[in-house]
Length: 181
Ligand code: IMP
Ligand code: MG
Image (cartoon, rainbow, N blue to C red; front, side, top):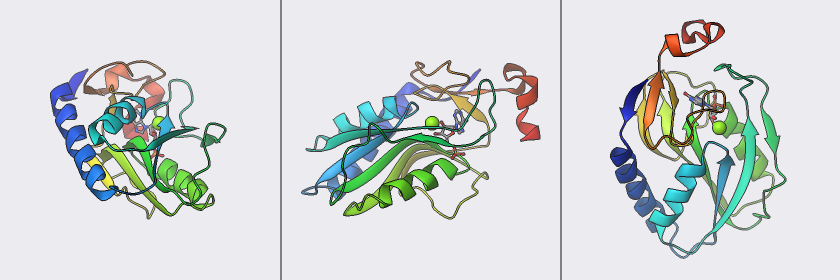
């Protein structure tokens, strides 16, 4: 495992994003919607960096099965999502990869008639995008490697790491060789 982004770099970038959002949403009826489980670290750090009155809501999405790094069918659980009608919503996720998750979740949120809707991610993986939509805010662009830490997992592991690390092929199951994705 190789460290790609140190904890200190993440702290600085998240603080910067928090300041930007605080400026953009001053005086608005903001609801920050975190995508479980990957966004928990970002969500917790970001709202504290914003230092602004806001509501926190959650939605659950999963697209990976078992040890696979390849996306499967997207499963969404809206049970934890509060009413966002008429509110200014920012959807928060850990990473923008193919973009299918963000695209689908924005669609679901749009149906609930928010006053405005934007998205923010910690990481934006280069060269993998399969959708038109792009995140409105992001902290880092990263190359096409499978990453873990700061909320991101591989088969449920490594979310607790304070930094972002890249897994190389020998650390992934053979069927998940990114070269085959
Ligand atoms: P997308 O729908 O392809 O954009 O994938 C987004 C979701 O897939 C994220 O919310 C992550 O949970 C997961 N994901 C994508 N790339 C990675 C990665 O490199 N490491 C861990 N999880 C990832
Ligand atoms: Mg996720």
